[in-house]
Image (cartoon, rainbow, N blue to C red):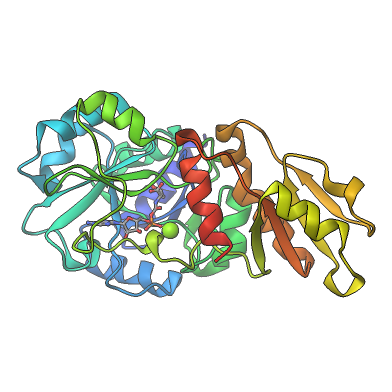
Amino acid sequence: MNINDLHKAASILRQGGLVAMPTETVYGLAADARNPAALQKIFEVKQRPTHHPLIVHLATVAQLTDWAQDIPSAALALAETFWPGPLTLILKKMPYVDDLITGGQATVGIRIPQHPVAHALLKEFGSGLAAPSANRFGRISPTSAEAVYEELGHAVDFILEGGVCAVGLESTIVDLSRGVPTILRPGMITAVQIEAVLHQSVATTPSSHAPRVSGSLDAHYAPQTQTVLMSAEQLHSFLSSMTDKQAPVVVMGFNDWRTCCPLPLRMVRMPQVAAMYAHDLYAILRELDKHHYRQIIIETVPDTAEWSAVRDRLQRASF
Ligand code: TXA
Ligand code: MG
């Protein structure tokens, strides 16, 4: 980590600028969470509707009370176990938290990221940084500094280099602001892990009264290339009778499907371990999207808890 880059990034943020910040999940587009003009820029650069709330990133749990109130013991238990890390908590907001952060709601999303560069920046900056994923609205989140540049180019004042994101999918979002703890967006910290800490079951489908989550729109995280999900059986029957008209396609799967296809086929073998699959997924989709295939075909993944975040993102990518 370059200390001069860190100072430069913090100084840009203090002046109301935008900095792309590496986190362990995906790169974020950070702005001073107390500066409405800076927050406004996030929405302009992302072309994101302003009613979609932003997550406030902090360096320490001690800062939590600057942003949230009536913090339940469940929040502290989850914070102790999973922070710093890929978990966002939805809590009752302090009155002065800007509407641009909350989407006009009574709650605020908070996360303490683990990436050393994010942590160092947050410490140096000293207050909260609002940071959505550093992609244009609805597109694939960036998991490398190069991907941020592809998405946003010079619209960002500075891109902090932090390598490839270790997790690769956005944080798990848990709403603790009302009734039963509810997972609003699955991530690599699973419902089962959260239940083990809380000693109570959590809801996994948000009720119709739950706050808005842009990541829960059906068409999200989507490549431009038409993307379809197929089970092994569906893949077998599609590929074995594939015609020139349907080509060229690329298959992301566990098996090597080239043997059952009469036509040349690009095959990307995906990891069988959920965490590795999550780590690679967005970078692979981003790369394949540049090749103008007729379709990206993705083999369905196991129906188990550890794959829930990957399954969720694949469903959205293929909508
Ligand atoms: O891993 C992550 O969470 C990444 C990194 C950069 O931290 N951030 C991220 O931010 O994914 P974004 O804005 O792309 O997605 C955040 C989601 C949005 O869908 C937003 O609607 C939801 O969090 N959210 C934020 N505040 C909320 C609130 N008060 N109530 C309900 N949902 C909220
Ligand atoms: Mg996003």
